[in-house]
Length: 290
Ligand SMILES: Cc1cc2nc3c(=O)[nH]c(=O)nc-3n(C[C@H](O)[C@H](O)[C@H](O)COP(=O)(O)O)c2cc1C
Image (tube, rainbow, N blue to C red; front, side, top):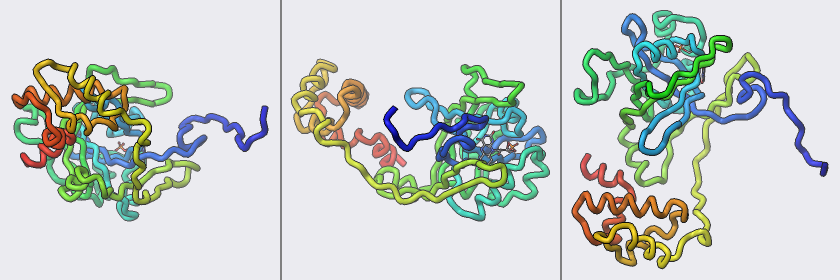
């Protein structure tokens, strides 16, 4: 073997934090305790799971945590993305001490709880929805997706939950930036409970933009050829096709189809660059309506 700088690492349990460096988010999950109180539990193993059509998160939790038990019982939770702030993270670690009941741990809670932001139409009768964290930058209000069987290993006490995202709410200032794509909120990065003594957090630095390589783009002709074949009732101007030259070829057909679907819904038969501008970001429409 050619000499290099790699050496093997023993793969231990909780390998992501014991045998590797794995940057993770920090969220506080709110659930409803058996007494009807909101419980907050810090979690990092919480990632996007199904991202198209259905929208869900995967949560990996100790199966006997308050959060896991509450999700199995009530099927609802909210995922609160807290900002980077040392005082808040200290409290977050406090709320992560295992084995405390909701009443015991919530006495030390320093986060502000406000009611769920679900509207009346977004609520099921007889279900109590957990409060959310006012300091959060964004909150995903979720329900357990019962079409997936909960993975629950009774020996290792590891359990996995697919959480359907019903609603995302975000602080107004950050929603504006979401559309402009220039500024990013200060969210903490968790490197885990590495040495059985400390949790390790860091602040992220300001993201920078790395453009897609020019040579990977399509020619306008390629886009135009594919565009005219999506639906005979919807025409495209060349300038509209130009807006899609940077879409990777494997996604082009799907992107064209989505534009045509939106055009048909709005009764439009010629797709122009102005229309593309409007739908390039479905959120633009959302802002207009908000
Ligand atoms: C920053 C942080 C991240 C954590 N991430 C996880 C995780 O992803 N999964 C897990 O099972 N426990 C995780 N824990 C430990 C739980 O927070 C701990 O089991 C706690 O008791 C859960 O609270 P609950 O019982 O109220 O749900 C984490 C703790 C901290 C402080």
